[in-house]
Image (cartoon, rainbow, N blue to C red; front, top):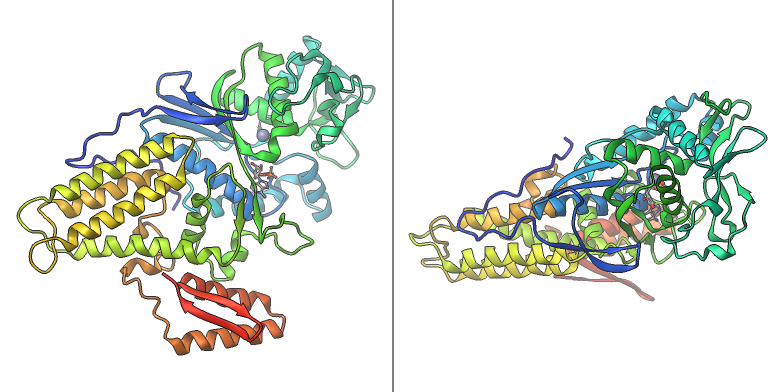
Length: 504
Ligand code: AMP
Ligand code: ZN
């Protein structure tokens, strides 16, 4: 089931957090934390660059998509209305190459990866965007924008019927990426969609058709759009000439987003985007993911190795979006342990008897949780502080139950009050309610906090892992490691073989 946007539930007896709550973000444009005010009341219009659907997305892409999900959810949690648009790049150099190698029509080739992408979003409980426009369905919008650019002499047609953006016509070029325009090589051109800062040149808006490639008719003859114009045309089509937030991974700052600004502002004459948010990359075991290193995992790869999507979502959320996220199998252990602590409390809450009077401690803790999570997330998505507030809350509620009358207890209405506060903050996190996840994912939802593995089980699994490694069956070895670390077992590989202890 796709997750759906939800309102922050009212929490009975808990003072309201100011809504909409003031927010500040680190704006790549200007490189500083700045107050954020939507252009249109409490309505945030936001565009995020979606996947290029030539491949199954990898966990790096998913880190970025989960960051963007956290951003939308947080804005809703803080009382804003959000319209989110995410494009699908279903025509560019890579998709065309892939379709040609697979000997398939472009749409048939990309269909597999579009399905796979939505599947991954659902698995990680990413709330669906309002629109997922596909580039191939908006070619007319792109042609219209390019015509405007040509008419305004921001673009020119080359001999073969391609169209290029004239960088020298844009005084502001380089503002986002911090490029000094005096170093630009005017008049020289670059035709590929991706290039680095060393090759800043006039870039391509429309590529004349090559034999065997998909093409569309245009005023300049048959051809297809360049990658950058796709996002300019689609974002303006859905959100208007000026909107609030544009997001993506840091690799998109240059040239993609720089070029989007140049094209759109030159075409519309209006400021394009107010706030640019970019998330740092995910790396694996300290290294950049790459096919050749064999460390480029998809979500399905990790699930096949026993990783639970809920634990992965928590792991993604845990690291602040402007820091590199180093994925290791070991780091799943701490993520799973954190979720177990929450699950154990929610389980305990469900069973603790209620005495006659409400305990002020519970209401106070709930209020503190909502206030601290709102303040932390409103400060440039300060997840580390927000999670600290969650775990202080877990401690406070456990303490309140311990201090109750009789064997253990809560006051009237406290159970609901305590759970409602969790539900309220989970509008932003989307990870704390085990019951929202498939049974296999909510494994710890009985809350016992017990990994269920005996010492002999652990010794047996470690022995099996050694055998698997010796047989170079690294998939099985990883699977065992995940099972153990998620169960809270800390493994240290020593010259005398693996040692283990139970973590917390
Ligand atoms: P692409 O399909 O390559 O256009 O990428 C889709 C999204 O994933 C973009 O926002 C990229 O910036 C982002 N992305 C690509 N590689 C990584 C990575 N290793 N870590 C985090 N985000 C990434
Ligand atoms: Zn884009």
